[in-house]
Structure formats: C-alpha cells, structure tokens
Length: 325
Image (cartoon, rainbow, N blue to C red; front, side, top):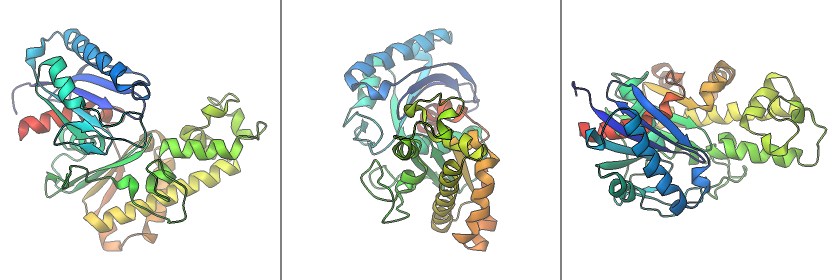
C-alpha cells in the first residue's frame, strides 16, 4: 500500500475507549478518548463512539468517505464472525453487536480484532516487529492478552479467539481471575487483579506505608498496579513481595509462550512500557527456570518501542490488515 490510506481506529479498553484517525505511514492525525466508557451500558456508550469518531474525522480535515476502513480492537472473548463482543471478565458489556452498529453509524467498512491481535499487527506495521514472521505481543493492562504471528500470519484460531495467553493457568491453587479460573497469568499480572489483591491486603491497615505513596494519597481505591511498582521501587516489603511475584509469574508465562511458539521476538506492552527495566530485568533473570536455552537464545524479549501509541495504532492496524488482505 504505497499511496496514503486513511483509516479509523477504535480501541475498546477495560475502562476507556480510545479513537484515532491514522494513515498507513503510522501517523496519528487526530485522537481522543471516552473515559470509563465500558463501565457504562453499551446503549449509552455507542452514540458517544459514533459521535466522537465523526468529530475526529472532521478534525483531521477529512470526510467520512475518505476513510477506507474502521478497525475495532477489543478484549476477548469475541464473536468475530458476527462482529460481537461477548462477556469479558473486565467490562460490563455482554454480547453486543458493536461491529455492525459502528458500520451502520459511520457508513464505512468496519472490521474487528482482538485487542492483543491488533497490538501485534501494530508492531508488525509500525513497531519493532517489522520484517519478522514469528512474533508474540503480550499486553499488560486491565487484563493480560496475547497476539501471535506465526509464519507471517496472524493466528486467530477456530472461533477467532486464539492468543488468550492471559488465561494460561500457572497454578491450580492460585488467586481467582476475573474469568473464573484460578491461577491464570492475568490473575497474577493483570492490573485489575493486582489492584484487588493489594486492596484486600490493606483494607484495614490505613497506616501502612503504601497509603503514603504519591498518587495513592491515603485512598484505598488508588492502590493499584502502579502503586505496587512504585512501592517496590521505594523498598516497601509488601510491594517488593508482590512485584517479585509479578515478575516470577510473567517469566513463567513467557517460558510457556517460548516453548509453545518458538518465536523470534516477544514484545511486552502497556504496564511493561511504564515499568521498563525494573520489570524486564528480573523477568529475564527468572526466565531460565521456564524455558530451554536454545529456545531462549532464539527469542528476543523486549518492551514495545511504540509505547502508548500501540493502543492508538491497534485499531488502525486491524483496519490496515483487513485492507491488505
């Protein structure tokens, strides 16, 4: 695709919805977000999605007919055949026909992809995975998801939900996950589950050092993944223990992924981007416990260079992938 092609990207998150107008050169022309949109009923959020999408196209100086495709990325499970978001562990929507509704509302071709699948497409189009054929992208946000490219092709599976790597079970006796299973990778490393565990530990301990961290400001609801990270940096024992477990379990999950797919590269996104080497270094130190040396040596584990742009470009990349195919 040599000529400039404009697409619309809609990124459905665990709480917010981010929308952008982008092109096939990786430029984001306009972008904005709707906070807490997936915590509201679908019927209330849908008109906001349509309205903001039209506004952003106009802000970019374009007309809707100049947008070649709209790409939606959302957390699974999805019904990709019928363009529906099913019941997700991390949002209140349940079996909503978003792909059809957005296509009707905007009047343009609309496709949908799992958010982590769209993330790995963004890395292939615009990021560190350019030119590679065997790549796994692991997103760590409200939940944990995975996108897999093998032999240069996106792996979607029978029902379109391949890559739910956050729900690999690491410990049958582990903490409960939002999906209902025990001991998932997401139960240990997903932002929501980490926050809930931390809040449960400190619910009746208002004098604990964690409450004094900047950004927590003494409020229980502000005890989240970021608080664990900053508490660990500050040497607070509870946070250090939780951070060590996050790194250990992430290394365990990565070891399973390396053994399963033998990729050239695993790219860590979202929370890993903000943690940097404070997360990556201990994960890599633990990784020899969970994967053969030959597999590890063939695979580069890195943090995304796209940073927050992965979310912006994910929906747009799903649209570009549909146009390419």
